[in-house]
Amino acid sequence: MATNSLNPRALHAWLLLLPALTLLAAFTHFPAVATLIDSFYSTPKGGRAAVWVGLENYETLVADPVFWQAATNNLWFALATIPLSIALALAMALWVNERIAGRGFLRMAYFTPTILPMIAVANIWLFFYTPGYGLLEQITGFFGLPSHNWLGDQGTALGAITLVAVWKESGFFMIFYLAALQSMNPNLREAASIEGASRGYFFRHVQWPLLMPTTLFIGVNAVINAVRMVDHVLVLTRGGPNNASTLLLYHLYEVGFKFWDTGYAAAITVVLLAVLASVALLQFFVLDRKVHYQ
View (cartoon, one colour):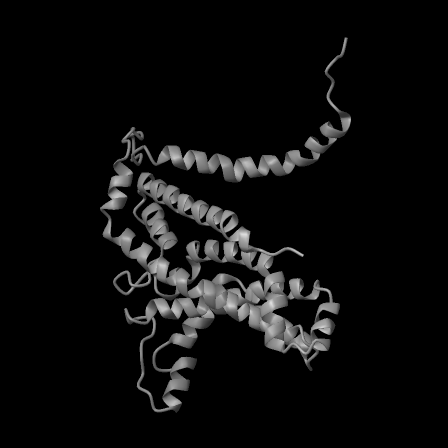
């Protein structure tokens, strides 16, 4: 008669995974489920406990003009930062992958913004954008252009934050592209040179297809970064002027910690998670078909 016994190797494997699984469940899965449940309850205040309100928080979200303004801003922010940061990262990786003088210094210079704290980066650019004596004002003044409040103008506030985000993220994405370029077989370039292929032809038909898995990975991270941006907004503009630079996570921060409406904040969080999950699934299951593996 056969007896069921736990495989010692399987038990050992599960014990090795247990710490990571515990942290993942405690800090990711449980908070997500708890937030989903909280979104159907009112905000507890004083001695009044939270009560079931159903979809009331989501109805408040639909009727909230600030939420839709933040969603629109975030859409434009993502449409600008994602392609620009990826294109700049790829261009920098292609350049520093070549045998050029000072290649190590260039790699360090491109990657330096990545290791700086987000708050420090925002404060640096706050000085650049300061009207009257900021670095950008000094440059524009040299060419005779009038002074401009880049962060205080509704037409330029979001663009100013977008520029900071691209400068911050492109160096991080460059590292992944550089690693992918260095893992390619050098014989591919030699064969293309023998066949008389130009540099542009070699990139379009050889390097770019082989970089598609890396691009997919970077694209998913770029989407997440575009939605979770809050540090720069908090330091540079605080969502102003007139919510012109308010992004979704900053709006969530204000609702949850400034106005202390935890029920409504939970509803916004659920919507953000649903949007991010949908975009990630779309990228993996639709764009994955166009990814070429070696």
